[in-house]
Image (tube, rainbow, N blue to C red):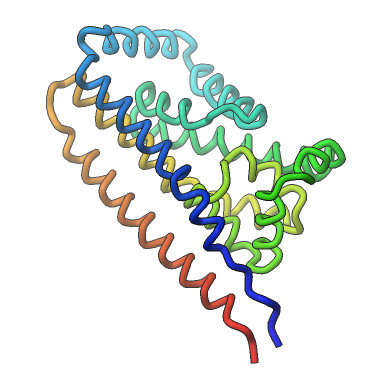
Length: 238
């Protein structure tokens, strides 16, 4: 007889609005930049920032990756840096640097929680209902939960980086399936680059728009596939 299935609907329902907020804020901010960009001098600010990055030479990307890693460990809102990467480095390198910085940060947070500050992190999370839900879901479904929470913001990004360190998820399972941040990263970075390119060149960057639409489609399909697997796993064994 299988274990009692875990009802994930309350988690999804409670976090549905939270998952919509960040993309909505991004869209509103980018729309504001399109409308008010010329008056606010956004283009010049971007050019000045790019010049500063270029002056750092090879250390520019290194500095950005280091800042992203530190921000992730410090639980700062990383999506702001993700958007900045699209504006500063463009679609391709923005995705590369953001993913590298985020992976280093989420790995460091996991190791801190598991090996270096387990008591402190455990005390912080012990009273968290979200942690108890994540722990139960991980125990029931294993690695697929790592993939799902990276694809869909059921739980805050910085929260799960530490919380997974207190679960039974193996280190390399956590690292490998955390690469599921990539589709979301591409959407944010490419979307930002598309807006910046439109502001700079006064045209619609159709290639970037096409990439953005493809990635949104891929994420949708991946999420549906992950949910289907969860439903299969919840079926009691005979």
